[in-house]
Length: 81
Image (tube, rainbow, N blue to C red):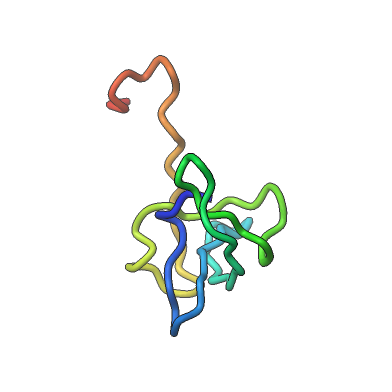
């Protein structure tokens, strides 16, 4: 996962997982270092296909509703659209 998605809560590594109702849930994870691209390797705590919050992790609260922003497409040069 992107390093920006990981934050510490009382010394425990956590991520915010986006629920189906667009709320966030704090999830403790066990990390296993980083890969060659600088992403955090998660050993446990996540299942495949979950959406994570990558930015603003320090400003969120449990159960807060968020509006996901899609990643810019290849034709959106500079991410302006």
